[in-house]
Image 1 (spheres, rainbow, N blue to C red):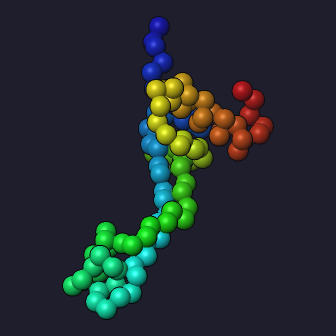
Image 2 (spheres, rainbow, N blue to C red):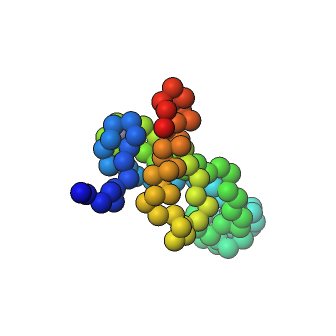
Length: 103
Ligand SMILES: [Zn+2]
């Protein structure tokens, strides 16, 4: 008997899943007498911003085999976020988009 230690795609039963985290940030640079940004003097260095604002985030688990994506949200990674919890997240996202499939 095999111990199930993989996270399985409910759509194709393969185990090539990746967690994707897409974030959009807006960086602001105050215009002063030299290069834009109070911390920049000679050139605009993108990491020397005056303000950074998170505009949007999106998380999903994607199957690299069949391309199905499963929306999810993990605000932090804890010890409780184990394989079972990830599999449950994938399964519930799959059921939400496939209402005819019974668990
Ligand atoms: Zn798949």
